Image 1 (cartoon, rainbow, N blue to C red):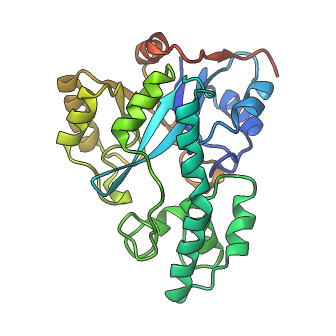
Image 2 (cartoon, rainbow, N blue to C red):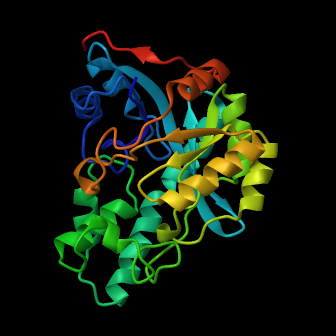
Length: 284
């Protein structure tokens, strides 16, 4: 089985619609794909409706969190999307995205970049606006060569000149809320240092003690040494380890299935979940 547990659609900051994403996942030879848009479940229904036969959909979301001033992302799988407290927190994060993006556009203009809110809004379309949309605008303007090049201290990284904070969950609250909604939590790309500051290993241990289920190890932003370090940490803490592409369509260079999750780990994630179940494709 080929299992990719971290992808994005136009419901947040990917370039594939949810329907295109599941069709592309099947074409890439995946057996299981998780749709984990940022702070939203808005793409799930369309993905279900288009799900090809032979492909299983795992519903999820990537939750924006902050711990001691450091931003981090928590992948949440197979939770009840209607659980009110978690739904309310996702809405608070989404509502803060537009003013935050407008503020980042303002900072870029102060730095001499001729980006406009209208340009960013056009790129975001109906998706939950975020930094990748602003980064795409910088690519269009020729300021940077790629979306990844925009995520540096010069521009949009967590310590970047144009960075603006947004409403984010405390990760301990995120774990509690997801578990209350019957879901499973995996810390996304925990040591992706190229994105900015990362939480220390001691914090990962504290999150594990609070009920964190796993950490994403095999990811494009982790080199071999980092993956080995994370595997050792996961073994010490009793955490599951996953691998995922973090696919964003044409917005990033990673492809569906570039990194995958062991079938036994996937089976354990499904076993632990009570809020929702994987959706088998019926040729939608």
